[in-house]
Image (cartoon, rainbow, N blue to C red; front, side, top):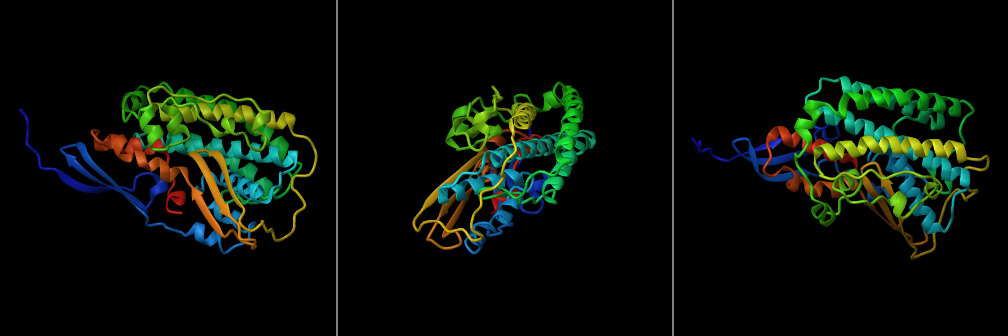
Length: 368
C-alpha cells in the first residue's frame, strides 16, 4: 500500500567538519527521498582575494594558507607559481624538489583527513579517523621541522622555499616513510574491503563522466568518474617532470570510487616523495630577489596546480605596483559543489551525508 506523504523542506547540516557553521543544504524530502536540493553558503566570506590586493607579493603567501587549511603547502605552491610566471623567474632545482616533496606530503595528509571523516560519516565510531590522524600528525611534525608551523605553514616563497631543511629532517622523513607503510596497510585492510563500507557506498550517488566534465569538477572526484586528468601529468610544474607516478582512475564515479581514488593517490604520493629524496641535490633553495617584488604593468599570469581536491589556480594582474592589481582564485571546493544536486537527488538523508563527504570540500576556499 502506498502511503501519501506531504513534501517537507528542512535545513540539513553542517555535518562535515570543514563545513561547521558555514554550509547548509536546504532539502525537500518526500518521505525519506530527496526531491529538491539547494546548497546555501557564503557565511564565511573572508575577502581573501581583496586582501591580496592590499599586500605585497610575498605577504600574500600567508593568505593562501588559510584557503584549504588542510592543504596549505599546495596552496602556497599554486600562488608562488603564478607570481613566478608574472615575474618571468624560475626556482633553483633544489627549491623545486623541496616544493614537490612537501606538496606530496601535504596531499597524503589531506587525503588522510578526507578518508578518516568520510568513514566517520558512514557511522564508524572513531577508530579509522584516529588511525588516519595518527599518520597525519607525523607529517605535521615534519612541517614543523621545516618552518616552525604545522597547519598554516607559509613555507614556499616566490623563487623557491623559505629555508633549506634542517639536518634532522631527512632521518625523520625516512623514519616516517618506514613506519607509514605499515600504518597505511593497516588502514587499507580495515577499509578497502569492509563489507559495511562497500554496501553503503558502491553504486550510491554515481557521477557520470560527461556530467563531471560539464560541471568543471576536477581532482579525485573527476578521476573517480573515469576521466584521466591530472595537471601534474598534463602540464608538469616544479619537479613533476622528473618523477614517475600513476594516476588512479575509477570506473563508476560513485562514493566508493571517490574514496578508493584517494587511497590509491596516497600510494602514488609516497612514490613521488621517495623519488624526490633520491634525486634532490645540494644547492640554493631560493632565488636572490628584491625584498619588494614588482611585475611589469599589464602583466598577467595564471598559476595552477593539481591540489588535493582538484585544480587550484591563481590569476594575477599587475599594474607595476608592489601588490597584485587583481587576484582571482579558482578553488576546487567551490567548483566541485556544482555537482551537489546531481549527487543527492533521488537518494536518502543517510546517503546525503556520505555523498557530501565523498566530495571532500573545505569552506575556507569556497567562501574565500
